[in-house]
Length: 379
Image (cartoon, rainbow, N blue to C red):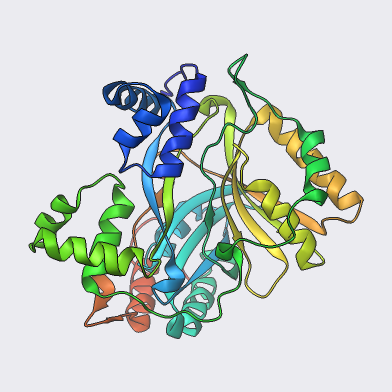
């Protein structure tokens, strides 16, 4: 049963903005800024966690971990949609996997692959296709994702409701900046800038951005001084964290949808202007750029009544030649139909990533040929 939303007010939105600006580890500073007691801030955050799925997470800058991000669209063979989901989980370098529908029935996967093993990952996807669990598998290499945290943009403080001025947005796009933020620029290299302690810290922060360094030290069995040194001098200085992510579903879950969009442009300037227009909007969660192409990927969350208006706006952009085209799939957010995980910390040994391609292939075939209702037979 989906819990009914309570109403957001202006103070709630100010708290969300402050969490994004100062990070979820600075609640006392945030409370002073919004001029309410720290305990009241925590109570409001607890209410929003229940009613609006507020989660305080960490966005990792995988490029500085020597990893390339892959976005995979896999169309399932009819009847094997859930089995495809399990097959894609065989490769433990996924960080997000969800069933999807719309343009096709299948799965959307986001993987982080050590740069020196990208060819092997492409071979894994080809093998997945050969098993006939999937009819088609498309993959694109992407930059790290730019996290879009909540702002007061499009929130009417008088009526305390979200507004959707699509026509104003269309006017805004051509006037925006024509440069991409650094997170959406094609990296020059994928250099590993972390050791095992750094990765343990990052992994724990991915799970809970508010965890204390003391708790991390206790989990790793080391001193607080050691963890503090690595956090300040490695994790932060080497840019292993892109930002703290204020995961938030601002609209009624029963009547809203999560989608993954793919946008295509004929030049970099148009792509950059469009990307910049998304970076402060309440319906955007993340934005990424397809490597070496004028194309973007983005996770979008919108009320169903506004989704058609958003697509109509995209159609207008395509009609005037600003955008070449767009595609999208709906994400299946039912329990058991999606999975989010951290960097594969267990696969980092003695200063390097251990990507066992042969083990991934073996596990895939073991699963495919395991006796049961999903046994695949080849003619």
